Structures are given as C-alpha cells and as structure tokens.
Length: 330
Image (cartoon, rainbow, N blue to C red; front, side, top):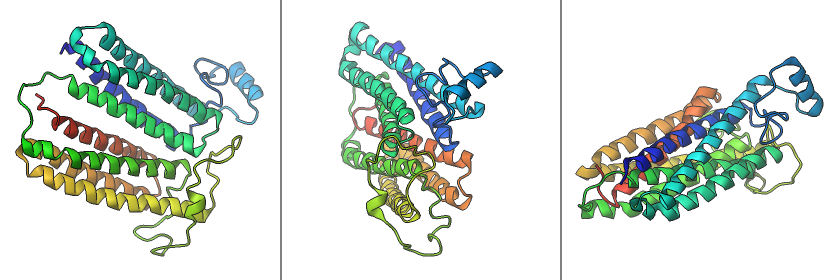
C-alpha cells in the first residue's frame, strides 16, 4: 500500500476526531446557533468583527443578537468540517484515480464521501431547524459513523503481513461487533439527552432527586419528530420527560459498562489482543467516571467535552480491535 494513502487516511482520522470534539464544545457551550444562517455567519464568510458589521448583523437577525464568542466557535467548526470533506474527497480520488493497490477502497471511499455530504446537510439543518433534537442527534451519529469509516480505511491501509489472525482472535469478532453496537446505542442516547437538555434532569447520583425511580414520561421524552419552526435551544420537554431521557441514558451506561468490561476481560486472556483489552478496560472505566462527574459537578464544560471525546476514543479502540480480527497488522 502506498504510504500516501495511509497517511492521508491517518490525517483525516485525526481531523475527524477534532471536528467531533469541537462540535461537542460548540454544542455544550450553547453556540450551536451562534451563526443563525448557513453556510456563512450573519451573511459573511467569516463572522462579524467591525462595528458596522455587527450593527448590520443585528439588523438582519434581530431575533438573534450577535455574540462574538459563539459565532467564531461555530464558524471554526464549519471550517474544520469543510477541510475534512476535502480530505475525504482526496481519499476517494486516490481510490479511483490513484495506484491500483488503492482500488479495493473504491466502494468504501465513495460511501464515505456520500456520507460526508449528507453530514454537511445535517449541519445545515441543525441551524435552519433551530437545534431540532432528532437532527442534532443524527448529526452526532453521522460524525461518529464517518469517523469509524475513516478509521477503518486507516487501519486497513497499513502495511500488513501475510499471516492471518489466530482462531481465538477471529472468534472475538462477533463479541467486538456487539460491543460496537451497544456503544453506538449508548452514544445515541447520550446525543438525545444532550439535544433535549436533560443532562442535569437528575442532579444527584446514584439516585434521581432523592428517589430511585421518580415520576417519568417516556412516551413524551422519546417522541423523535416534533414540529418544525420551533426554536429548540434550551429544550422544550417538561421535567418528567427529561427525567425519562436521563434515566434511559443512565441505564444504558450501566449496560454498556457491563458489556465492554466483559469484552475487555475476554480480550486480555488472548496474548495478541491483551494490550487492546487493557486499553478498552481503562477507557470504559474512565468514560463511566466522567459520566458520573458530569452529574456530581453539575456538567462543567471541560468534563462534558471530555465525556464526548471519550466516547469517540472508545469507538476508535473497538474499530481497531475489530480490524485486528480481519488480519494481523504491523
């Protein structure tokens, strides 16, 4: 495999991770509508800075007064996302027009490029539909799916030996896929919790408002599609619905913890996978701790962003472990 393709995939993976973490920072610092239009910001390619530009912006969007700290965060996120799209296009170009050895990645890079374009549309709809929860959650999942596909390209394009993984390694494939599926569901629940501003619906831990099971409304809390034209910033759900969403995420965290620790313990027993198993164990315990601290410390921004980053790192670890069951890499 030509190093250029692998290095490009590696750079794309790093940039994708940065986009995910920056996106979490933008969302958690309430800057998701820092620019009320798209793709520009208050009608500009950057963001207003001069006094007359700010006055013009406020006249154009009187319902959304300009806030510099929110605007530049949102635009930097868009710039990085645009750079990632160009990198994915370059990967697809190399797969179709580059060295023959890259041709095996044509389908994957084409799917990835289509996904990135759809991800850009989700970014636009996040703004134009004013943080509609289902769109916000879909944007998060789309970003992590893109990240996963880029990681697969990166791992698969490394120089590899001719020997195949042993039987014990291959048998872990199903368990790792199960772990990815469970983690994906938990990430979706986390996205839904964040999009509906339910992270602090239960301000105490391990109980919720002093009860093990307070009054909830799961039916209302998990209505996926709501009316268009409403500004969802700050959330619209009542307290019982937010508690239901929050508790679902807590339960999911316990299930995910159990599944991934069980997987890690099995991996540790296999010499070729033991390092990955120990890494997985450490990451899942750290991620669970960050989740508890989010509640105990009332959602500090740095901790909340780290919790989002931890989910991406956990996913990357599982993708890497899954790739090792396909063939041995060096």
